[in-house]
Figure 1: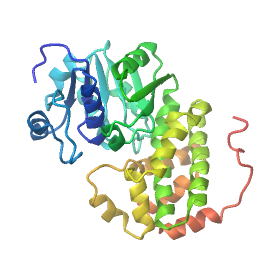
Figure 2 (figure 1 turned 135 degrees about the vertical axis):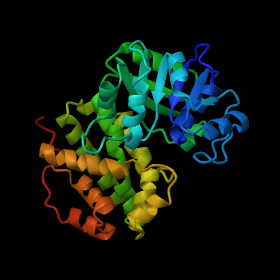
Figure 3 (figure 1 turned 120 degrees about the horizontal axis):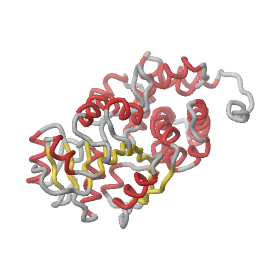
Length: 341
């Protein structure tokens, strides 16, 4: 790809969600470039209009351009959407930081928290790049439904109104309605945390426990999400919106959710490593469970569903034992952890 000529947006990451966003924008007539790691993947997208490893049986927009050359694509893009897994986020952010300018807009879509540091993705971007105009795009956005053209909504949160307006303008006219907000912390925590609860919800399905159990897990999971978020400085009302309960509903209920699938298979008795080895896509709830569990301990937060999921995916606790542990806990006031914050 030549850097000559301005493009409307650059999407970083050729997985299912990055490809879905780039394809959506190309379908809107935007001049969008999709950066992928492997030249052969870029060639497949450019010549065959397919990305068979991550989105088999999907025909991509013929005007979608892919490249494996990061620097020239970055130089040409006024707005960058970063959609890479949390485990490789810092590596890619560091590479981005070598080229990006302070006047460019950088919005990420990654729903995870860094293991070890407990950093949110926007914190990593501040550490690794000179970008000032940062934002996060999150919400109930399953890639398969975006490819299908189903109506959906998302939240773009940023301290800068310019970031919100530019992102909304980029997606204007399509089936993805992008709402604006300022709570970056809450938006990032909501998007990350819901993957943990989706694993728990999948476990309930795998054990055939029914909708009462799933409703209990989702509601108490939302409370844990808000507890962690408020302790980090988030606005509790964010968790009642698209980046909180909206994303939670979609990810916990849909068979398209890879985190739900992990939980489903755990509930049916499969070993976690066998599950992960069989997956092409990353289930962010697995590493996020560790990151949040460790972070909660340092803050003195009691997050029992997080602890149960962590024990299942990192310590070998069985699904039945995890449910029994949760049900044996004493009960108290429903909103006691949030009421006086």
